[in-house]
Length: 260
Image (cartoon, rainbow, N blue to C red; front, top):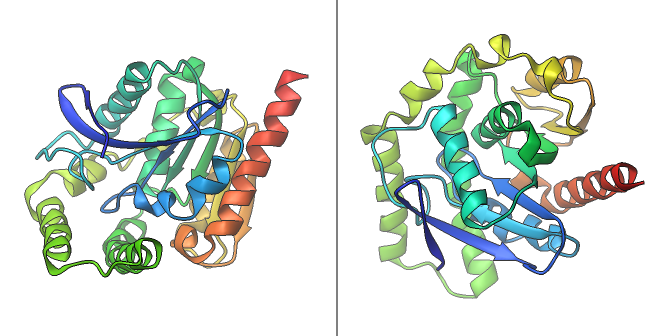
């Protein structure tokens, strides 16, 4: 269980294929943890890339904090993580709220990002889109338990289940995470996305409440392509292999064009 100190916070990380030349950083969504990638998506990407996953503050096995969930703070944590790992530039993949963190980081630190994958990022201004996070968190927990059992061949114990539920109770009820997201409600409308000259893949579920946000981003980000995956907001759970292969194909093809 690797724990490193980032901006005076204890952060849980996992790395695969450390020897690879190119690094991909995977950012999970609100109320989940890095296991959304660890079981199915990261191993596919690790065939070609050094993969870095980390638990956001108060998520998974990272240290708990009551505040600091705005996009500026979350982006700062990500850059500090890269600095700690001595990685100058990365390919950035963000899912749901993690997609907003990825966008914010790419806008603020353009020289640190090679390529960008935004998956099911919601519009913080859309109350319905914010509401799906609650439902998503419940489905994620079920997915996490199932994959833990399938992967480790060990039934998750009562103590581990209770620990996970306590974490979600803390996030829901004792942090500023929802309030901070509401404060970011004008992020997409005020951001100058046309300045984002980074190859960008937008992955959204064909039946997702967030699909319109993907279509909007596609009109605003010059070098972007939108791909719809069968499913809803939970496409990393519903189609993990397809998601992984689509991301790997995008990164590899775009990277080869950049290098030639």
